[in-house]
Length: 331
Image 1 (cartoon, rainbow, N blue to C red):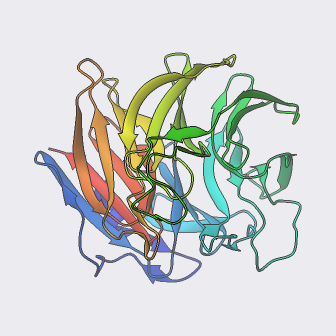
Image 2: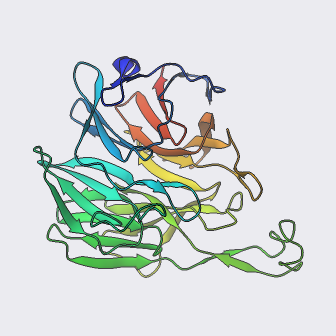
C-alpha cells in the first residue's frame, strides 16, 4: 500500500503530500499514513485488480491509480456542485464490474441544470463510452454488484433497490422512519420539542455491503443527526418486510465493510451541531468483532469520512470530504 503515498493527480498536477490539518489517530497495533489533495472531496473507493479507484466530488471525476503510481482521470466529468444543504454531490461511488465501471451519481447540483446523468446508475466502458443503466432514483448513494444486477441504496427514498443490467428495478425494502426517545430533542430546541414528546427522523440509508447472503445497510438517520441514533440492519437479498437489527448506537454511519475474519467495519461520519454542522475530527472507524460483537475504535479524529475499503488482510483505506486518503496498516 505504500506506493499510494506517491499518487499524483495527473489532470490537476497535484502531488499528494502530508496533510497540514491535525492528523487522525490510529489504535495501537495499526500504522497510519495520511495523504491529501487540496481542494478535493474524496468519496468512493474500490479496487480494480492492483489499481485503486477514487471518486472526487469536488471535480466530478473518477480516478484510477496506474502501476506507475499516478491517479489518472477517466470517463466523463460528472455533474457536481453543492446539493440543497450545501454538501457536495457528484459521483458518490464507483466500482469495476466485469468489463465496465459502474458509477452511482448523486442528485442534481443546485448550481447546475438537469443532466441525463443526474441521480443515476451509470456504466462506462474502457473506451470511455457512457451508458445510463437507470436514472429512476432520487439519490443513489451506494451500491453492490451481484450476479443478477445491482443492489442500490436510494438515500432520499429511504430504500434499497434491485436493478437488473437492463435497468428494470424493484424495491426490496423501504425503511420506516426511526423513532427518537422522548426528551432527546428538547435540549436542541425547547420551543419546538416539548419535554416528553417523541420524534421520528428519516432512516437515510447510506452504505451497503453484501456478506454471507445478506445485505447490510447503514442507516445514517435524518436531521438533526442525533448522536447514537444510527443503526446497521440487514435483509436477505430477496428483500424483507422487516430488517434485522445488527448493531446500533452509531454517530451517522456512512459506510460498511467486512474484514477477512468476518469483523464488520462501520465508518461514522461524525457528530452534528446545528450551528457548526458536523464537528471536525468527530468521524471514526469502528470494528465490531464477528464472534463477541464487541466494538473498538481503530481510527479516530476523522473529518467527514465517506468510504472504507478493505484493500487486503492487513490494509484499509478511508476517504473523506477534506481531500484525504487515510492508509491504515495492521502491524
